[in-house]
Length: 182
Image (cartoon, rainbow, N blue to C red; front, top):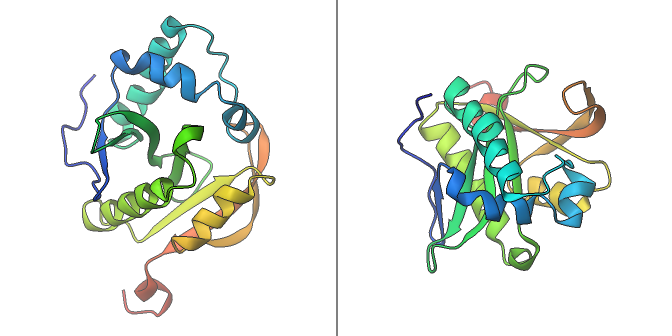
């Protein structure tokens, strides 16, 4: 597999990078938090080895296939991994899907919003995307509010076979696309 070496999104407080199997303990912790299971998915990870396998076969495979995926997000001040954020290509959706998940202890500080904004700027400037979508669990009001704050508009719901559930669907477009100036 080959992976894009850069560029990656960036922001004032956050650094984005490709994950590696050495991040398995972080992934195990993040993906076993109650809100992750409730609002995203339970991937059945119970060991560091399971998490390393997930990074290799799912996370890095997405980057290898489409050049984008969920970057590992670190706090610039400490280098500590605090979450994931990026774009997921889903065959059932017309646009790349903005995805994010942050450890509980790093929520409520504006970090997910900063990460989402950085990914949207990267999507526009580097990938030349004019539209991005996002899906959320219908009960995930916190993520819905974040999406609205960064410019997404709710556009109904979608049932995705890939995740086996119906999700709220949001759409982000560059302003000039709607104004017919593109």
